[in-house]
Length: 522
Image (cartoon, rainbow, N blue to C red):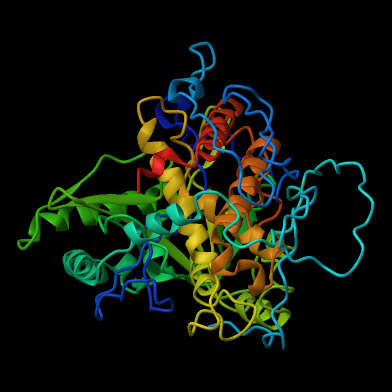
């Protein structure tokens, strides 16, 4: 349908573009990895919230300065010559450019060797396939879809800095005591608010939805940020897609019987996301004054954000998001999404698509402002299930013999973005990037490399390098499809400007070429 112009819009200078983010922040959940810290007892709180072209041999390559627009070539397997570190200020842009339990197939009888990277040469002692290597061909030009794929390398620990990466992961591990302490405080506040909301006729059926990185076991650093989602079942509704986005919708009731408490939020037969969020926020703001066992304040509303942000005891940040639960078929825009048939199996995909989906009051970008009556699709609960049961084999990561490094790579990528955002927080270039971008790219990479053997923990350095390469290619091509809604590009120019994407790309290239100094010394 045609967009509703001029309807409760805000100026972009006040708002700024935001990108979809589903349970993108902290991680939690049942323990599935021995490197994960144990979950907090009963009180575990949720948070709602292709590789590029092959690189040339690293021993003789010249390092491009970070401010160039060319992509640095991918390192070949094996050790590389020690390079003189670049100056950090060289990576900064000039002032003129300154302005993100599923079932699987049975494990194979024998471990499949990881593939070697296109364009890499055999190193001494490296294993290779008995099949002859096909003659080299011209480099494929990426299409508007997923970036070009590069197979995972074969040599173990060949990528420089593999030991450093393991030290970083050890530093990121959260202790059981820290998690339990933070979860207890947050759960007390959330429980209080949930009881209060249930007393309101509009939100009487509200329940807590356990999703987010806390349950996904990919929470990093300190346990001081949480995402909470409150779900609310709604009567039969119909969705009208907003401006062919595939992600944003107007919500109408198929029937509007008298006594429907949500009828208070109707505006021209449309369920107003802004009105419902405003009432939700008002109830929480009033109720936090009645919480005596914690110091709770509400932070200023972020333009375009669906979350109500609370600060507890001056150190714990909690985003609370209202979500409408729909137990109907997923929208047509998701038909080609969730490409896990060759990874987790077609059966698992079918089972996941039978689950409910959610709508959060996230405003769509409209010109220089926002359309405040729209709702955005959310599949954070499906993301949780995928990460909890991420192996092609049913027993992946259930014991020492059947482990992979998928989650470790995701943690490292999240930490890399987090550290860069902190390093350049004054420049505002990275404000529009979130961990959801990293997670989305990671899911696409898992689809391209579905075998557990392609994520062997002994190949951690190489697997992480491939994750970095893929993300850089997404930035270069300005293409990052929503994993569930392929027609929705998270890196489109109307969501994130080209200058910001180029800036992040240059910083990541600089970090990789210098073995990630932003991770610190180990």
